[in-house]
Structures are given as C-alpha cells and as structure tokens.
Image 1 (cartoon, rainbow, N blue to C red):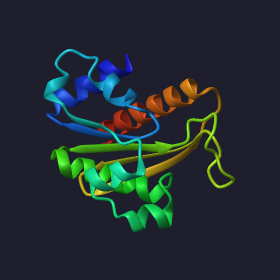
Image 2 (image 1 turned 90 degrees about the vertical axis):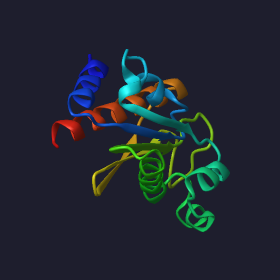
Image 3 (image 1 turned 135 degrees about the vertical axis):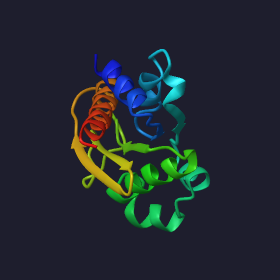
Image 4 (image 1 turned 30 degrees about the vertical axis):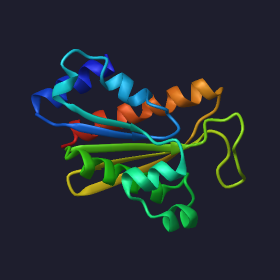
Length: 156
C-alpha cells in the first residue's frame, strides 16, 4: 500500500528519486522499483557500503568522513545531497548506520541509523535507534525512509 501511494504521487507530480544506501544495502531501491512503471520515477540506486566508495562515487571528502564519522548526520546529509545532484533528480535520500550485530560504539550503538532526504533546496536528516536483528533493523530503516519520502511528497 505504501509503495503504491509513493509511486502514484511521484508519477502524478512527475517527480524523480535517487537513493544512496549504506546500512540498508539496497532495500530502499529494491522497494521503490517493485512497482510497475518505476522507471518513470526511479533514476539511480547506489549501495555505498565502504567509506572509500562514499568518497569516490559521491565525492564526499575523506576528511569529512574522518572528522564526522561514516555514521553521522553530516555524512547522511552529504550522501542525500550528492546522489540527488549526481542523478539530477527531485529527491535524494540516503541511509547510513549500524545494523549489527557487531560494529556498534558508545556514540553509535547497533541500531543507530541516519536517514537524510534532499528535496528542492532543503535537506532534512533524522536519527533513529532501532532494535532487533540485523534484518529487522535494515527493514525498519527502509520502511522509515519510504515514509519520509511519502511525507515529503504530501507536504510539497
């Protein structure tokens, strides 16, 4: 239902979307392309799992990644902004986080996910703390990202 709503709004408003995913590993892109006709609104989906690819593909400065950390509000913002610019879309959305079960830190425990959305000249970012298994955390992040796209489109 949610995906059909998003697709309908994107198609009616002739809006396009690009995705830069880290911790969700392509789940958002997969979901957005599961609707027939998605090629009219889905332009690009990137899975940037390593720090190096964030720098190479999205031109995020290595110093920024080192300073803020790969799992941070700032990097999520840059990922959303850059994927939108790269794909020339209306919307750019990104995820970065720690799905676990390992990799958590005091600052960013397992389940910490940043989702950023770039639309028009604004960028919003939200920090989430999800619990569950790796798969559950990834799916919760995907679902939240889709809801953020829907909210953005409904509030335009």
